[in-house]
Image (cartoon, rainbow, N blue to C red; front, side, top):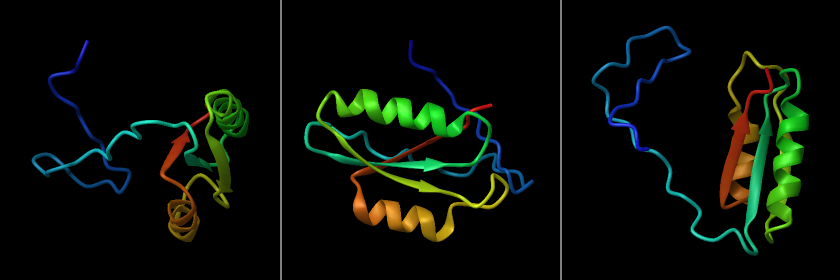
Length: 95
């Protein structure tokens, strides 16, 4: 079931109500695609992302991995490096 609205909360502590947001496009076919996985260093994030990379690998995708120094700061240069090497970046929290 598709959501009719999506509430975004900024980690910067500012009001984002009314701002325009665009989601990144879906990767149409992962066969042969290289996907980036950004580990935010939270408990179980590595396990979650490595497991997902393995599952997507069974469908023909390859993986490149990056890890933030800690969960508080943004991905910065690591995100840029992953973006340059991959068709899309997957990140998640393992809490």
